[in-house]
Length: 236
Image 1 (cartoon, helix red, strand yellow):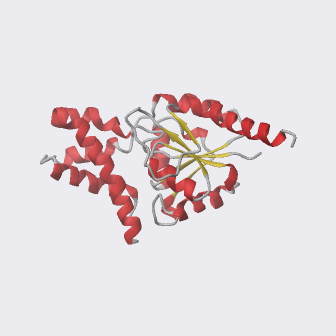
Image 2 (cartoon, helix red, strand yellow; image 1 turned 90 degrees about the vertical axis):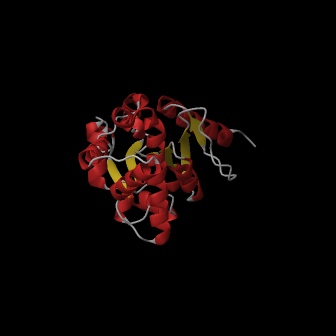
Image 3 (cartoon, one colour; image 1 turned 90 degrees about the horizontal axis):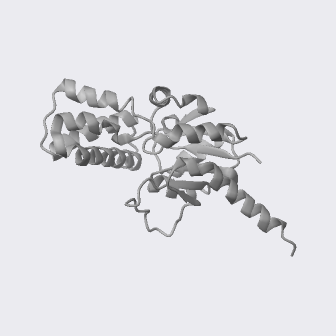
């Protein structure tokens, strides 16, 4: 059985709040809230660009969201400070569980891909800096079709580009909108609920699996298929 795993990058493999330390040096105790607003606005801007058919690469959404956050928090950064923050967004750290999980999954027959809103060159750099690029067959980016997640076209693009079997293709993401997008496109999806405070959107569309650490991923997917096999092998 060919099982394909599509790993979201920002927020799933890489910690987008890796910029908080630098922000603390600049704005003190507003850093955490600023970082969250910055991240939320990046996603909002990608949604809006997708709906408006006004595509630009995700780093533009990141930069525009930084400008918005400065206005919202009435904070003025110098050009050098902004460039420093944007540079950190090109070198985000991997979550602690990412490398160990990917090492174990690489030993299996699963096909591992990075699947991102970011352009390939940006994601190549990010994954290489985080020392996890070597675990992926390839990087598949929305940039090839000039729109963003959760457009159904994005998930179809992943399946066709990876030559995957849709029924055995899994999105791995900490972002509920991404999980719902994949499920709606008839993929399977794992929601990485990294904290108990994270809430899944109550749309009546549930993740195939929910985990709170990537270290659970291999075992959970294995158990899913073992259970399916057990059900289908039972005599009528």
